[in-house]
Length: 207
Image (cartoon, rainbow, N blue to C red; front, side):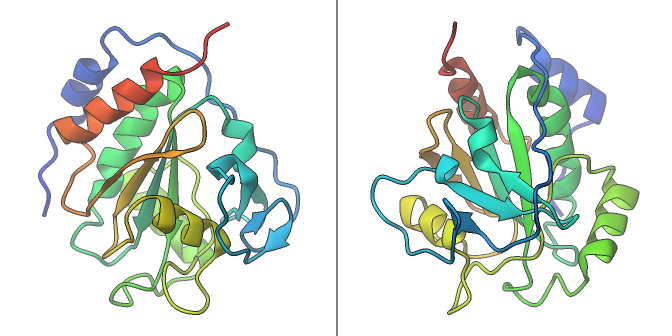
């Protein structure tokens, strides 16, 4: 199990010097598969950024990544029955700490790695909110590999690193391009990850 430092200490340490700004939420539009400008299951193409895509929200709505243009986005492959599942707590700390400064954390549940996310949407929400107080956005269950790999995840893994297991992470910059990838063993409180988040926040457009 990945050890996390006390929540209040981490929040105080990471929040120092950060300016606050409310995190926008994307209204639900309609249920659907991952799309790029409305084309479900598209093949990755040059010229696309994360802002070209919409994702299926776990509540049946839509997460429109274009709504987060100008903000860094941390995408995380998640699962409920993994040895890395306690990282949900650290991801919530990142959301609460850096969200006001502009960071968007999005969890993408998947059963692709070891069959460790067998639950349906209601079970996932109940588990993550009940055990880890998760309040950042989650998508519906998606595929990271195989013939059913979703279009956004094909693009993400082509631009960054392919996911090898649950809780692989990708940091997307304010311009919608992949900045860095982090394997499962890099915990949310890792100085390496926090440094990359700070750097992406500092590169946000001003004015």
